[in-house]
Amino acid sequence: MRHKAKNWFEGLRNNLVKTIEDHDGSKFKVKRWKHSGKGGGMMSVIKGNVIEKGGVNISTVAGKFSEKMQQRVPGADKDPNYWATGISVVLHPVNPNVPSMHFNTRYLVTQKCWFGGGMDITPCLDFTLETEKFHENLKQMCDRHDSAYYPKYKKWCDEYFFLKHRNEPRGIGGIFFDYLNNDDFENDFHFIQDVGSFFHEYVDQIITKNKDRNWTKEERQLQLVKRGRYVEFNLLYDRGTKFGLETGGNTEAILMSLPPLAEWE
Image 1 (cartoon, helix red, strand yellow):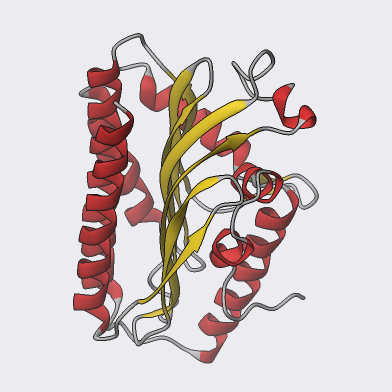
Image 2 (tube, one colour; image 1 turned 90 degrees about the horizontal axis):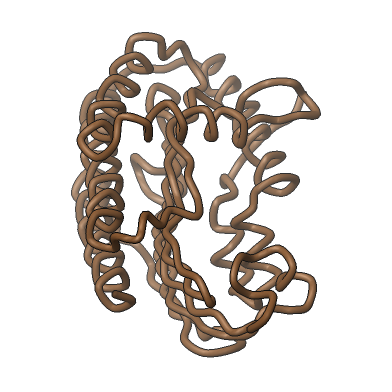
């Protein structure tokens, strides 16, 4: 089961990298890193013509949780050993008409095991029609597995990707889930695969549609301010950022999600 998840994440990484490079005309720079425990990962970063900065990271690591983490992670209170594999993607486009996009999925094993992850979209301009279409298609994908998934995971996403200090959402939402284990690995894994495939297709579709649209200096300024909100969320609230830093992950890979430029007003 572990290697099945690991291999899928690696394959998805390769497919996403190819799609983005085909759109951009630039190549990802790849850097491998070793974990402080066992294993490591591969960080792929692009700074190109369509994607101003983007990262597609994969990792498979093992180690022991700190005493603090043992109390917070299911199955780690009696045995601190863990194994984890996952993929994380963040794309900050050049064109303000293309939203910033985030996606991750992971499989974590302690004395228990589960999948987690999700995706969310952060536009800086009016995105009403695209938002409706995105959520409609996302619901259809979720409903193929369980009709309870979309409302539950959308609500979780809306609550999670919310900047409490500003009383505003980060973007238009998506889905967010954790501790997914229905005692049926294959069914859970198929859902994880569909989530990844959905994101891959969405990236391809929205870049194709909007990458060549005209934009103004004012729209660029709106984009930079929205990116500032992105920075605030990731440094103040993001669980993945905190988890990576607290378990000896690669700092450069963890902070890959931050945009290359941002502004505050």
